Length: 496
Ligand SMILES: Nc1ncnc2c1ncn2[C@@H]1O[C@H](COP(=O)(O)OP(=O)(O)OP(=O)(O)O)[C@@H](O)[C@H]1O
Ligand SMILES: [Mg+2]
Image 1 (cartoon, rainbow, N blue to C red):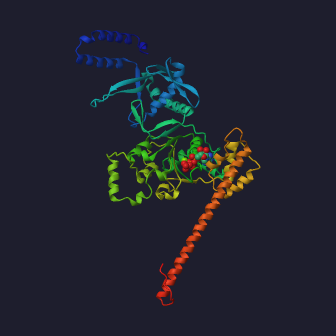
Image 2 (image 1 turned 30 degrees about the vertical axis):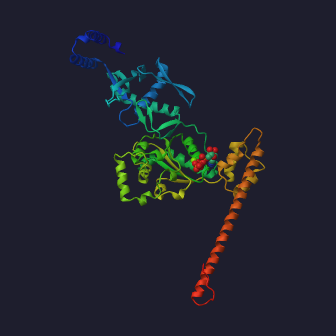
Image 3 (image 1 turned 90 degrees about the vertical axis):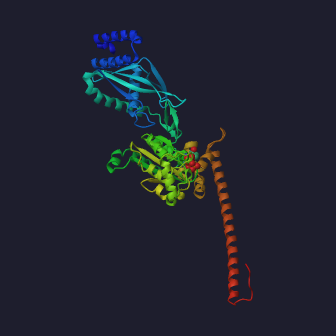
């Protein structure tokens, strides 16, 4: 683009050339001075304007600037037709190559007939000398150049256009991610979450659950995802809490995957036991992106949160405040109030739609404050496999809608508590020889066996109870006899 300057550019180039030859003979201070003013002069004479967009601009400690990311995505769609050097990434979702501009590669673009130039540059900064550890850092930025004449058009409408297009391309190419809270290094920067691509196959179609309940949940999720204006109107953060509770193997984790697939959201799997304190929890929340499901599994086991709020002594409160300030001990010190703040979205100032899901096997153990409506807006019980759920599993695993053995399975399921995980395990063909009928027979056998064990257990408990009652009666008789003697009503006196 410099050659467009014509004579001015050529003149400046000659001066710079002469300067480089004699540079070594000029004192250092004068050379710096000359360089500084030469650059100013160039800028003053240039008919072009440059705007830079830095990758990390202090918006957040860990995060990349959203503007930088949107520009990068926008340019990757341009770069593939207009640049000659590319960096290639394999897009898992579309199973295709995604090309993006390489460093220092210039990509031209035209907006309303006006030409602009983009280039990705980097500055290497020497980090502060910390004893033996002297790292250097690279700061990347996009530089946009255009003619002064179009300042308003480019700085206004064009940048808006780039942001919009960039975000639209991101949504289209979005490879959803499953994040976990293990910090990882991305170039020179630490990120609070590391991720893998999220490719769980569960959907609401494959989820074994009564259809009415399923539909209700799907409608709830859909309504939530379309309610941006509504949440803004009522002045609440755009988030919704779900509590999934029920015995192991009833599909709580499967339901979370189905929810994320249904909404096309990322999943943040938050392992609370590794979070050091409330401050770290807050940072983790800030680093979550919009359109995400934040999951805390087995909330009752994660931390000793139950009743902590009620029991908290003055000493504990002081400790918690210290923890908030500087003390970063290794053991987890997330408190119930820290978690409540987390859920209330007090720190999710960055906005955007988020779903929070807790799972537990023991809902009765949780502090009511944690699961009250408004925090956990919807409580969903995941229960044992009924006939309707079985039919979904039979369709998933055996590809059948009906069978003469269905009636028997149905009546056995009504009498026996078997989880969908166990039903699935029993009907899954174990070899090529196993046909549909033998798979269903396996399930029937397992159900009969379970019913037999249940009956045995019930009989054992009944016998135990009767035995206890007998003993209690004998004890009561003894006491009664003792008291009669005391009252002079009996000649016998029993010692119990
Ligand atoms: N409702 C269900 N629909 C379809 N598949 C299910 C369902 N419940 C369980 N399964 C099957 O059983 C396996 C275990 O289920 P899942 O991990 O979702 O149970 P969970 O309720 O999360 O158990 P836990 O309380 O132990 O975490 C799943 O991989 C899935 O194949
Ligand atoms: Mg689970």
